[in-house]
Image (cartoon, rainbow, N blue to C red; front, side):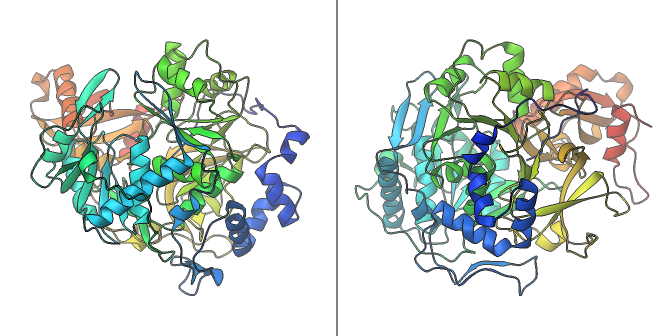
Amino acid sequence: MNNCSNEDAPESPQPAWTPTPEFIKTTNIAWLMRRAKVDSYEALHKWSVQNREEFWALTIERLGIRFQKPFSRVMDLSGGVENPRWLVDARFNIVESCFAAPADSPAIIHQTEGGEIEIMTVGELKKLTDRVASSLKQRGFKPGDALAIIMPMTAEAVAIYLSIIKAGCVVVGIADSFRPKEIAARLRLARAVAVFTQDVVVRGGKTLPLYASMIEAVAPAAIVLSAKNNGSPPLRPGDCAWHDFLEAKDRFEAVICEPSDSINILFSSGTTGEPKAIPWTQTTPIKCAMDAHFHQNIQPGDVLVWPTNLGWMMGPWLIFASLLNRAAMGLYCGTPTGNEFGKFVQSAKTTMLGVVPSLVKNWRNTGCMENLDWSAIKLFSSTGECSNAGDMRWLMSRAGGKPVIEYCGGTEIGGGYITGTVTRPCIPGTFNTSALGLDFVILDEAGNSAEAGELFIVPPSIGLSTTLLNQKHHEIYFAGTPKSSRGETLRRHGDQIEKLPGDYWRGLGRADDTMNLGGIKISSAEIEQVLRVVPDVVETAAIAVSSGDGPSCLVIYAVCSGAENLCKDDLATAMQLAIKRDLNPLFKIHELVIVDALPRTASNKVMRRALRDLWLGRD
């Protein structure tokens, strides 16, 4: 996740929303402040990082996490801050804490494109979860097996997700928008032994094949759901239809696990061509739920809507942020860029609407969200890419001026490191708080404390990854990092950030060669690798640029053979087709620049930052 804003805003931006003292008293943060015996958020954050064990113990108490065997202590740092042990000696399965709300209360409010709203209660979700878990056991799957989910985030997908974890297995989350080659790579990295998928995806009025992509990706045994409930397509030997897979038994005893046991493998782009395979553990959902509880102020009975997918961290985040807080999630299975999605938000009585900034810009430009009643919304939350302050003010106006909580972190954090809280005034496009339970420092290129520069996280925290399946964790996050001014070990994250007056912050984009396009993190190397096969292309450099008004755009610098005879438009079309075919159709090329050579360092590395500076017109 990465949020930044460089809008032509005034030097000292003014709050667009300010909480009243009466409202602050009703917030979840106010409860924690009373328990911590502090009287300001600044003091609360300081307490949370100086008293990590007490903070997480109170959070676990507040969320009502269930244990089969309680922990003897919250944290053991005998292995250093890179390798903390959380909830020492505890035994539990996090899914058992997901059904604490009354059985007849809504768990999932969902609608397919062109369909009617349906409600799945907590009791119904639990029964379906247990039924799927029983079916997994009956089919011979064992604890530790990796099972992929490659389908839209439907009510059934949520039950499948929870059932895999309840059975002691590991979810492999892969977005259904990926092309077969990318799906195959992720299945291989995670060593998935089976996959849950759909026959097709219905989105934007189009019917797109999905099961066919599984076949092309040479996926393992597949359980295939029907998007239109009209039966399954012809299946490969060894695959089975959803209705044939399900057992009748709807009670299942959860497999009890250790805190460090993996529950989910998610993928995040690094600076190399291969995505990082990041395991979430039984403790990571506590970070998701904590952020939602204290920063988005989620309370029992709330309805959370956030267009996402189980292949991105915000999909699992949404599940745990809602269910562990005794709230409901709203799932719209279709494109969120039209009026029907806005009507779903209205009809579901959404109380928190999550967005990516490019989606808000689309709504504002098309006028598709006019004449709707979003009065039930208490707040918005934005993540994934740079926010435009003007767009966020417009978004606030859709719900009578309700605040936007900016939220920035990452898959390897399990949530955010910098965000906001409803106990402080909201300045659109900025962050107003560090996340509770962890800290960060801003350093310049010389490693000195600065008001603007690269951000480094001060570990440990529940949620922070400790392993990668396919890369060396220490090399990625800790090798070569400086110490803080207090001598603390620092963890690399790759974001650049600027501190503003009044304890506000603004993101400045990435410090490394990754980017966020439409809320999806991708590396330059992954895009460049796909473009190598385009005829006449010698080499390319992919960069993300922002003109200062919010989300980043993809710009390709290319060195070509016979450049003088090439048609630039035809080459751009061929490149776009390669990206659509081999990577992700959601990534759009904003501009193609043909050059004689790419700038390189003395060690022959492409200087992508120099290209960004060139594009932005700086020396």
